[in-house]
Image (cartoon, rainbow, N blue to C red; front, side):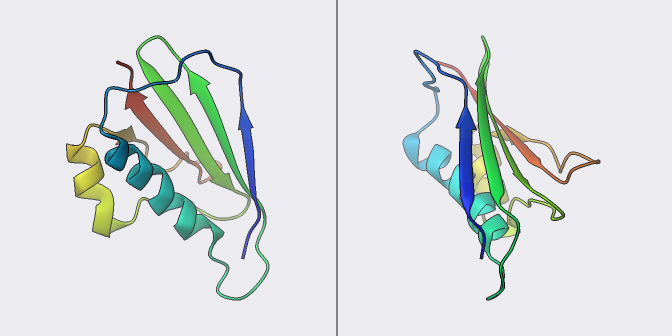
Length: 101
């Protein structure tokens, strides 16, 4: 299993216009998938946040592993208003975008 390291810039306001349940599901599902090491030690999972004018961006990365949005929650999260990449090609990181209020 992997350690989670959270890196973020300081932000006065990182609120989104989305329901809290959607935000929590969008963050937790890929994070839980990334930290699972199937009983073996895995490289740390790094989470970073950036606040832009129109959205809050969260990147979840795990060295040597692709971070996935599990199929079981993808449709619900997408319908809830969250956008994401299918994995940054060179790193396998998952970038999530939450619209601002």
